[in-house]
Image 1: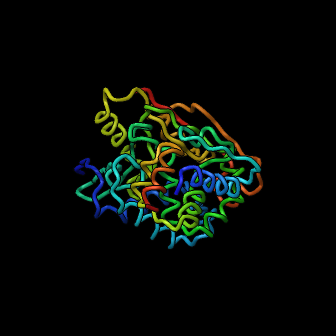
Image 2 (image 1 turned 90 degrees about the vertical axis):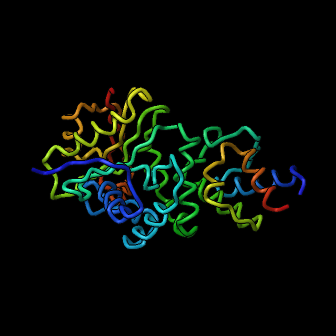
Length: 214
Length: 80
């Protein structure tokens, strides 16, 4: 029988976590926004994400200790980053601080052309809610109910500290939306961008916020 | 450097990055108070501030910033 166990992310997980972030961002397509919007190659994104994850700053989503890892027979099979929005200061500035620190300024400037797309699809995170990001189940472990087990484990850890969990998902990723609905998430907000550029840089021009009552 | 001069130089940077003609910054201001100040323009602002004042911020210092006043303090602490 398969042995399932849970633990926090560790430094040696970084390659697996980078794989998770990239797969989650692509959302089943070949478009990786971190590459398309900044004019970077996927290999450069892998390097930058690895460097960001090495920076151990508690409470920021891109550090390895923000991740929970589900192991199947001792090997990482699923993961996600979690944090309570607003608990560690101004989380909205975290990503930009990381970007400013790691992405060359000429690449940041390239992304300015896509600001309207991101403004259209922007979903505010709710202060005090548990945030789930970079949700990933390794392909060979899909369809085994690991997503539900990982979410159940994580929400138990945060019991008493928050009343809702929320996540954002590509609006066209119906498989993921259905999987979250099965666990109890409901769509709380839908966004769409009519900018032609959206489909050049993102998996789709739609985004959903989903919420789970804890 | 006098705080007034520092604030004025930072305001010039904001005007350039956010492409606006007027910018008046106060210590308590955050990204929520300024039109066009999103995560991307914030990245460019932080980059330009470092270039203009010839200072280098640590990642932890940037992440800890809670408002414009703290950015002024951080710049001041680096150029003394």
